[in-house]
Structure formats: structure tokens, C-alpha cells
Length: 176
Image 1 (tube, one colour):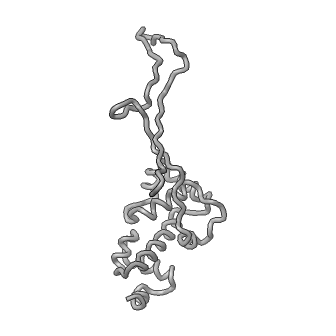
Image 2: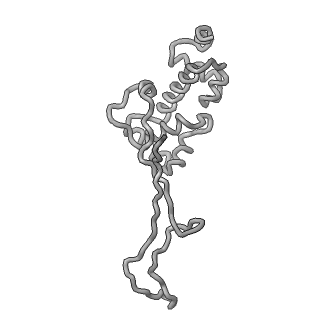
Image 3: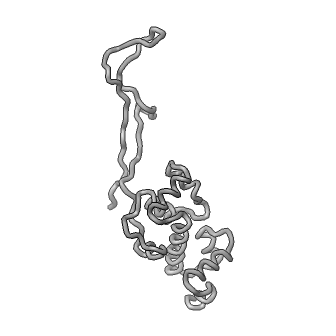
């Protein structure tokens, strides 16, 4: 079976001084551990931490203009993982940055450290998912364009021609 890569982390806040004291209104202040947030049944603050996102498929890395020479950063791996598994018609760089809890500017800066951009990764993931879809079964161009997140079918046809050097209709004759 798989390995659980999530860890539960419990954090509480404790004051250094163990003596009871009072605030400016004369009310007693206790130094018992105080929770950072409240859970349903107990006073805990739980986070899910993920060790490292899964490595992208080797074939996907071939679609980048320059194959990365150094290991990809955690942020880049997270972006690739989300795009490989997510709905490409709904994922935008701004929403992805929000889900990573960073600003879009920080996302761009971290991706550029790896020599990448969001659009570069998105194009490579679209090409990879297109190849996988066509390897399983033939799909009409408009269905595949929708699955890959293209707003217009003609944009997909142009991208397909750029990737393969052939028209989608020509490839259809070879596969059907």
C-alpha cells in the first residue's frame, strides 16, 4: 500500500513564567498552556505537513525547453503536482498561489529561480496530459481541448501543431 505522507502537528502556547499574575484590571492570569486555536473536542492547532510532493514523470520533464539541471524546488513540484492532478480549466496562477498561501509575485519569483514560469509548466503539463489521453483512446478535439483547459478549440489545435508538427486531423487519420 502507500505511505501516509501527512503528519499531524499539535502546537500549544506556554508562557515561560509559571507563577500566576494579574493583568492591569486585577484579574488573575493563568500560565497554563493556551491553545493557538480551538479544535472540536480539544484545544489544539493541527496542521497537515507534506514531506515533499511526488516527483513529476520523466516524460513531462522532456517537454520543458531546458531540462532542469538541479532538483526542482518544493514550490515548483507543488505546482506541477496540482496541474497534473487538477482541473486545468479552473486552475489559474492566482488561485494556485492562494492555495499555496503565497502571493502571485512570490510564486513567479520562486518558479523563476528554477528557470520556469507558470505558463511553461502549464504548457508542458497540457502536452503530457494530451499524450496520455491519446495513448488511451481517441478523443474529439473539442473534448480534449476542454479537458486541457483551453477556452477555444482553435487554441488547442495551434498548440497541438506546435507540439507535434502535425495537424490534429492528420493524427486522427493515423489513430482511428
